[in-house]
Image (tube, rainbow over all chains, first blue to last red; front, side, top):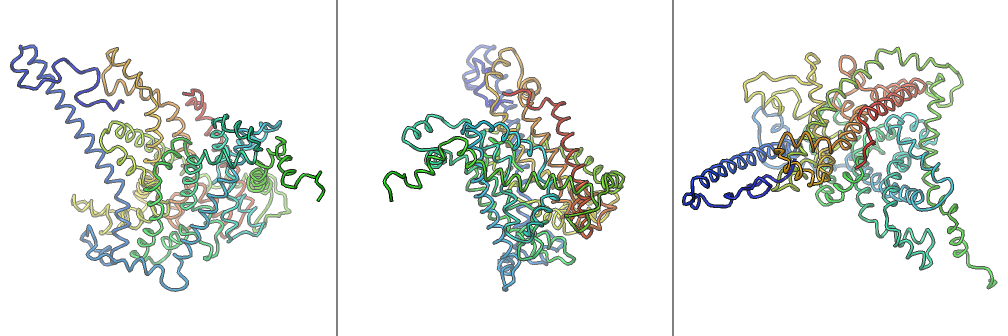
Length: 317
Length: 312
């Protein structure tokens, strides 16, 4: 479907299309007919536009509704949340719901947010480093067995990561890494998919830049760090942001590995509260709001790179 | 220091210029990690699946195919595979249809298109856990102040229990809408990128040949041109559905929920291998079966849809 549906474009434009109705009145009956036809068409286009935007705006409202619910419930009192009368906006915004989450020395939320931030940052940085180096080697360093290595990596893409959580848990627990930062981060660094994406990207990297670096006497290592990486920052940002989002929102692996409360990520803290016997609604929604706010900010500020990451690479995770 | 010996730094640099060395310096750390956290665990779990391995990862009692036989005759495991199939039958077509429809609409929007795109994509910032919280405790909480029941109330309809009753199984509506909300904007972006790659010349040629806007160009140009994108989205969606875990775990709650509530394969494996049972033998056997199943479905779907055959 084409975006061209305004009244003044497209091959359907007729000779009388630009005349005003008054001018049409002075012209012959054929022109008047054309003008009437044009008005009808214009009305139809307008109606189609109104319909289109009605649907789009309604869909936008539906998509934003859950975020509204988090904010409304998170800043309401329990009485307002459970009142049979729907309050659109809480009478007075209960910011204390949020500060209460961090009160006291053993605040699960504070620990959870800290753990999530550390895990997401380390996983993103580590994965970018390890996978981009491997991708560069596969794309650019001539080596006899590079093809075999490439197929060994692609083979792991056939097995969905979620299915391997039992075997990987077995490995991590025999290393003694259960409930530790290492256990949360390190097994997640070696993504065959990310290495594959970097290889595809570096295959299209302009070779002249590398040749120039070689002429200047840089080896592979120097070329990579001084020429290739500085000229690929947008791609690194795109992949890094998608990794960061995936890591912050990850649930299954932290659930398996983080068994002591000190190692819980924020998603595990929330999940524990959701599946608990007694539920404190205002606290829970305030916690959800705090947990999702950093990512909403990341989305608003880095939207361009995230969209690029999603559309260029297909999909991750 | 003798002048003839080059400094250490230079010597390392020279070594790194040999392609074979450079290759392993670059790719070595990744391959070691992949070996430790992918290859070995997978092989080890295939090994474990032939042993009686409760609470231990170094078992001694070889039981042959018993774990596999137990899994394949276990009503709970087969039920979970059936659950997945039902879930996929609902969620995959609706997600693909909704995200394609949304992409077509957004692509026509000439005003505020970037803003609308951002709004539809924003759910991707939300985790399944937070979405489960909103769906379970606010929209479909089953009491009068819940949003769904408030809306029903405006139409003077009776409030529904949604989650706490399994007959009728309204909880499926909760799970399906939750996943739709989280995924549609994401796949919409991919369809939108596919739409914007279609050359405008194709449409112009069609109009010259007398094709009309709307249905006929959609059917004869847009959809065929989106074939590769659609096949990729279908496949990714199907694999994602197979691995459903987060929302089932958080919306339906603990182990005790099954039966009567449905339970997807990963939740079942989680409780078998890592719950109170710690039965790694059966857990890994189940994981192997599931991985094979996903591989078969992937290959079949690739065959059926010609995934990867046309490259544009």
